Length: 567
Image (cartoon, rainbow, N blue to C red; front, side):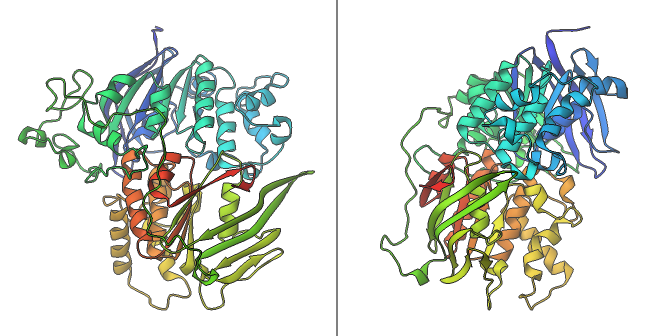
């Protein structure tokens, strides 16, 4: 029987074949036209909760409880019922659009699949209109390109267009705006809400959630520990974990965020008592043995009366930005002291009959001990600029110097003669999952730079694993199984593994393309402090991000990029 709820979870449990109990007794409901946001650290179970509704979990996964979508029980449903649910009743926006797209199919084919999968006739101009509604300029031309010819943010909007194509009753969106700037993110979620569908939003962006979600559910260690109306949770959070998330948001005045101490529990072991007990400053003896029930919207034994309003509530008012104090000399050093320098660099790509000028006469200087931020809307050329700096692409004009030596110029690339490129600079790519070898265990991925040809010392596996474990501890993944493959990790966890790999190399320059886009506030805070320590050793970072408050909190300089021009 149909109810006012479009989506209902009742005591849902999910356990993977690896022994990880990813979701533990979760219950919640999403009303018609309501937006409920799931927030929490990467690896806390948000994506698993979303995947469980549409039967997208791996084989040999144990799933119990009840999930009802538009009156249909999804757990145990027939293939015919699940086909009706996917795409027609419920649209799904994937967290990693690059991995979800077929590289041999054009963007138009991906959007059209929303109709073809259900043997429906595609209305005239429907594909163009769906893409145009999400702010893609010149959609008639752009949909004829392949996924790799679009930026990550543009591709993310294409997957959203496909999910909303049938005007479903429910849209499940897993980090739908992680690759978008703030303005694009707002307009994209506005477009999703205007469809009239109920929206289950998985996000780590608390400021975005505050502007768009009707209710918020805070997830921790596979459970929901707090749920309620957005304004109430953001102004007066009850659970200590929710308060920690809010404190981890970068300050509007350019201050580094607070770091939440400790690590989440190992979900392969049985958890006795409160899962947050090892990180909680207010724990009592009962918290060690008693699992707190959900009462008045919070699962916490210490919450028996209204708390005093938290000192770190989420303010959405804009303010002045202040870059952190820099120890960099204000003088103009000689070229030999620059770790990297770009001089009037341009890059043009040919897409069909059209030429796209991705970077136009860009000049950039990077000094030791400096973090340089680059901000701008999706598709403006930021990632191309980083690829040029990393010598992964050749400029059409201009010159690139690394360590005072000409490294790349128009038509040619000069590699180091006495210094390995991997020893001098290392990139963190925007798509962390694709940047990791799917066949390798994570310990091997992390220590890969230590086995490069210029490294003459070889160690035993035991010592390499010890190094990998120490690096994982630095990025907050101390409990992760070293033999795990990327497919077993969340996108946020893959992002931290990629960061650990760069830390293993200890390069002079770290080139980071959206290094915290897949991370929640608490993990981002610890990573930002880690990066600040990294440049304190005389290295430098060039960082691209849509998160302007974050850039202002950690960078010595922030450059804006618009339509290929570095301002």
